[in-house]
Image 1: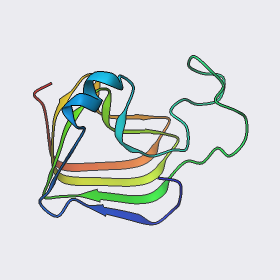
Image 2: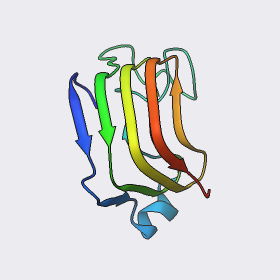
Image 3: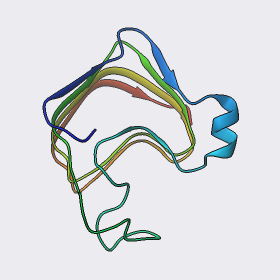
Image 4: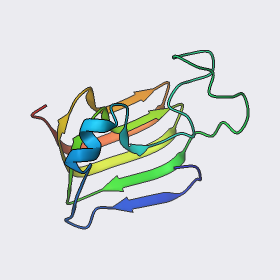
Length: 115
């Protein structure tokens, strides 16, 4: 997500990686709340110094299922004012939700697991 004021409504659908893609792409997030997966000077590369964006005023809502991801279901860096609710999250290799340096994150009625 590289803009503000976004609503993602799963509308009772499942959102997941294809099994073949899951086996091939080992670093993946179903929903990314920033333009880059690492903060500056972190991780295996700088990923460039330009065009950094961190989502703001985002709602991710269900009912629905975030399922099968080789890394995170929802990941973000320095995102602000994030509301995640009424979801099921399962079959992730690292974490259901990870938000590094994020502020004002509200998570309600979310079931996470099994891994």
